[in-house]
Length: 429
Image (cartoon, rainbow, N blue to C red):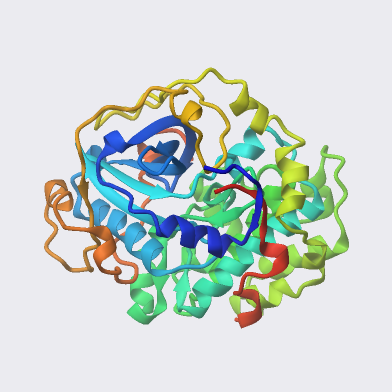
């Protein structure tokens, strides 16, 4: 298979992956290295799908974490929403199956991991202003799409933004999506992390709508710029009181204290607009895409130069000893891995033997269950048919930060299309 670099749009890349007949047998997948945690309850592994010699990411969820029906419904919500809602800035799923109380989902190999992990490991003081604008561009395009579908993401933060080595940015975290068509009362079942939550969510205001995501965008922008939110390490009650009684700490002196990172008036103006106490005064995602600060945004190749090449992310993968990650047994919060090589999406025969395949029992394909279905146990979750046979319903079930209990980790159509600056450079097939 050729390893020639192509200039491939993200939509085209997704379509090519969807054309592959992924199997429900874990023995067909060779796990290379851990990429990191996602969706508050899952881990992602760079893997090789051996029948097609193609690199993918396998998302792993331990089904024995909880027998609670809400946990099962939350898992189905992620699968349903990810299969149903498609956009170049959202991470797609191509297949899911259950094996030995483990739920596996096949998706794109976002090799650099989450922006939160990149900040922690490579950029503790945050990214440059242009880098922040570029990341926000892709985030806001995803939110434009979701909001136009009547959906609220509810968990916008750096943990839920993934980056690939080719500069591709994808938004995840659809386990807490709210469909406003289901009624505002149900919307309060889906609350995110207090650091990023809008004040109206603490108050459970009737006016709660997509602008709560915009507040989270403002907090996320500060997280990307300075390496942490203004509320980092605060107890939840202190965050609640601060957000309900005081203005957010967004002055240049407070945010940049000791960082020696001056940011523009446009940056702080955007932050203030996002963090308006009155939700009605906040801009929409489409409005933010036209904000003067977003004019600084570049394309995927810029992120390759400023994040991937200027850090040791690729070098870390390329120089690591090949190996197979240790998959925790069901019920165990432990996770360890040995890193494999940094790889393009297409695999060579020599690369296929670079690590030991995970040998386990054959899994069963998984299909979405609509909200209200009689899924009474984890065992029933493993026998509900083929995932790709029918699309799922909109969000259902309660969104809770479950992974934190078991592991310490945390409307303009023109904006919705894939444009030239959105094409991914250096992608391989």
